[in-house]
Length: 341
Ligand SMILES: NC(=O)c1ccc[n+]([C@@H]2O[C@H](COP(=O)([O-])OP(=O)(O)OC[C@H]3O[C@@H](n4cnc5c(N)ncnc54)[C@H](O)[C@@H]3O)[C@@H](O)[C@H]2O)c1
Image (cartoon, rainbow, N blue to C red; front, side, top):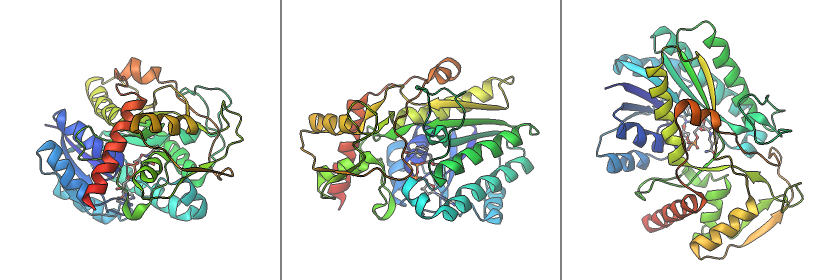
């Protein structure tokens, strides 16, 4: 059984991916210092999978501490590196926090993987690297745009760091560019549960308004050049994103001639506006949402959606859950959280 180190394994996408990896026969250990997640994610992963996941509460900026994990956990054959700070507005307000956390953790991990001959490395990137792309949908060949936030710039720099290393390394490096992951695991046991209400994305804000956690939803910008004036994004179910990581590891394992450095877009290919999400949520949940129009927010791009053909053709990846499923699973999860209070 192959052992994979998942960083950020107690966060939103990491926890869902661990479930998919375990379901597909991988052994998993996690590193997460809970700076943006809760230890309850571990219990929930264990409930869903019937396994006993080991998580090391280690800051990835502390290289000596990561080295200890590798010394304890022999035979790690691959790393999926999710751990990062991810809020666009927070990164605008605190850029150095983002450069420090997101880049130092990456360099530390890459260095240790090189030293220890860990030959498979999957990195969580983001569609934010495209900036305000001139042509849509974006493909993996679309050039980097002007980064609209320090967060986006950390992803651009990270990709460049990994690309540079791949030229002299014997490892296989896969960059997965997520579009907008939403929804929750179908069990209702796991979903997005950020620490201390650090909720910046539109989906948890919407379900939070519907459950009464927030008074209303702020919609930032109604004057964009889109069909209804609100921003357009490519929302994708988190379990579809999760499975792509399993496929990426299987692909590099099965194909010795796979490129040392490869990039895949993970989106559905369908652009949906914020107002369309609000309307779809009201239809699926049967709840009315209070919302207020606010000025545009620094760091947001107008419109972005993916061309996902490369992931389909090379990884054999397909999205399997539609927008209604994204909404219904996210809403079910919000109600589970409310019952736990
Ligand atoms: N969720 C999205 O909308 C989205 C979109 C595109 C890309 N991404 C990227 O995907 C990855 C995972 O995102 P997520 O939504 O699961 O975020 P998340 O905040 O839920 O999870 C990240 C986890 O990493 C941990 N972490 C952060 N810094 C750490 C450090 N220095 N040491 C140890 N642990 C640390 C946090 O505690 C958290 O549990 C991130 O790299 C993010 O930038 C996310």
